[in-house]
Length: 207
Image (cartoon, rainbow, N blue to C red):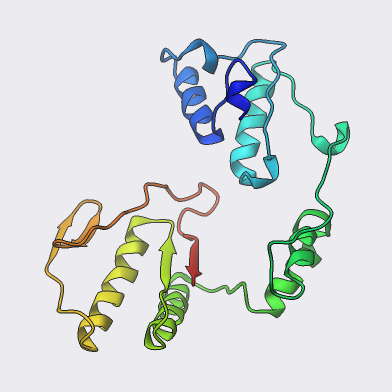
């Protein structure tokens, strides 16, 4: 939508890829260059990750571009949410935006939406939740941020499915990016660990 109204519009990730190239002295299109006085608009900034948005703001400030936090300039904000069916979840989502950090996650902790532990404990928790769904005939998806974690979860799932007769033992092809079943499509993430937490991959279990 914005690309039809502005001279140039980018995703935040695409923008920072070009800005990183520019910082290394590599040629980039004119639409990816910043000059003093330029204005950088981050639409729906609340949907962006904090680290990525911080990089965009720091880069804009260093280049002399203009930026202003919405709370200082004034901006429209959602007050009612209608897409959640679980009691309390809509209010909990707004609390993530408005409440003090010590209170923002209270609902999610009370309803076991957030779990913590070391890497092995979280691998076990994600796999156990997936296994619970599968044994009850549900479709369940495990996701992880790093290739190594994806491979570990996938190998556990394949071993379980083979042991329970749901699938024949896998013939696997392995390479630098992990292992995949022959004849079955698979996608590996390309994200790298966060510099702040290089050895603590994020895990999410979805149903």
